[in-house]
Each structure stands twice: as structure tokens, then as C-alpha cells.
Length: 388
Image (cartoon, rainbow, N blue to C red):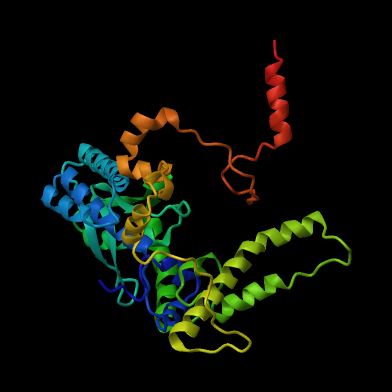
């Protein structure tokens, strides 16, 4: 299905940087195994949600088709099973106070009231008198996503409100992002009045600018998924500003200077990696030459052309399986996928520990507790050891 120019999923980007939507048109959409895995997870989620909430579903046939994908595994089923339980619980709660509550899955929503040629597809919409719920599945496990001030969710809410408002007296919209692989459930509740005010005073103007390719380029966190991120001049200028750090005249950096550099180091690295990836793609696939640079063959390891024939040849030379094979237990992640998360925990949970991770620097806003150094850990142990 083609994406809208001003897609709901990209709203945080084109609202922050209004010319970016037209700029991205110059670059083809790409996919990845992660995106394909997410698509399959959503297909499974739609099947289980329809089945559990009583909507028509040929469960056995649909599950059989989904399970044929090489990306499918029992771990995916366990995660989506929990998500579909959550969706069903939300629907049952709505039915408990509104007997005519309904649920729809994979709902195509018309957003043209606020966005030129705009549309989007919401994973779940639960409609009842008083409260409407928008639920979105995020199957990725990169970073937790918040529903608070989430533009994508707000657009889905507007589309759903426009579709169902005449049938139901809706005063509040409840927006939920569910990330099963991160155990993250983020919920934001917004009065309909506030949502409509945001649409009229902010969204409509931003959408008009974005559709026309007008406005100012703005670099920021929203650049992460922009197709033009490797060659965008505004992003380059912003990162080059960060790189031109004004050091004080001293032989060694001060602690506050190091702290400032750490704040921008990740952004600079990500930008440099994006530029390099774009340049390599252009050089290899488009024949572009960059002055002072050339495409060379990277490091390569030797491989067997036919492992079975190699095995037969070695055995004919009297080498045994013990001589020629390395056999070891698969990693925890692979075994968990094989068994499924619930069964894995039941059978092997007592045999799994998570050692303390290596120290890493993170912003103070990071939700993880502060590292307990080796010195303080040793002191803690000593104090515990000799307590009466």
C-alpha cells in the first residue's frame, strides 16, 4: 500500500521540518529485515486481535500462512499473544460501561480534513460513548516510544474522531503505544477539545507548509528516519556547528568541556555514518566519484564452496566428526525463540542469570540506575560479610 506524502508515521518529522517531505521524494523508499519482521508481527497481531475480540477470523488458516514465513518464530507469537490479550482487555473494559462499544482493526483513516491528501492506518480503534481508544503496536526493540505528545497517535485520533464522532459522544481520547519486546506500555489521555484545538492552531498550518515544500529546514532527533538524512544540508550545517567546539586555552580539557563534547558525540557519529552510507551507495550503484576517495574491496573470509563435499572428503581421509565439527549449545536468544518465551522461562528460568553489564556513559535523563563501581561494590560486600 502506498504511503501518503504526509504520513501519520512521519508526522513528528514533517511537522518539525516542513520541507523534508518534498525533499524525501527524491529518494526511494527502502526496506529491511527489521521492517519485514515488523510487518509480519502486525499481520499476526491483526489475526489474534480479531479472533480474541470476536471479529470474523479463520484463525487456523491465517496462522498457518503466517507461520510459513522464515521470520516467524514462537517468540514472536508469545509477544503478540500478550499484546492481543491487552487489546481484548481494553475492549472488554469499554463494553462494561458502554454496551454498544465496537472495535476495529487495521482501520484506514481519512485525514484530509487537516492534511492535504492525508490518510493513515491505525492498528486498533475502540469506540465507546465517552472514551475512544487508539492502540498502536511497535514491534521494534530499539528505544522506548512515548504516547505523550505523539504526533502519529494524535493524527490517528483525529481521523478516528472524524469517522465516528457522529455515532458516539466522545469527550476523551486514550492513546496507547504497546512495545512488547521492551515491556513498554505508554498511555496518554487527551480531551477531545484539546486535540481539536491542536489540529486547528498547529497541525493545519504545518501540514499546508509541508505539502508545499515550504518553511525552514530544522535538524534534530526527527532526522533519524528521513530518507535525505545523509545529504541534507541543514543537518550537515547543524552538525558542523557542533564539531567546531571552542576549546579553552589549556593543555587538557576541563571536566565541563568533556561533558559538553559527550552530549554531541553521538549525533556527530550518526551523521557521519549516514553520510558515508549514502556516499558508498552512490559510488557503487550510481558511479559517482568523490574527489580523493575510491571504492575498494573490503575484507573477506574464506568459505567452502560445498560444505557437504568437504565433509565427505575429510571423512574419506579418516577424520572423524569430533575432528571436523564444532558443536556447542546455542545462545540464549536462539533457544528462547525455539521454545517460546513462556515455556523457556518455565523450563530454563532457574538456569539463567544476567551478569552486571559493562559501564557506559549515558545522559542523566536515562532511566537506568547509576553504576555501582567496583570499589563501592567491594565495600558493600565487605560490610555485608562482617555484619553481626
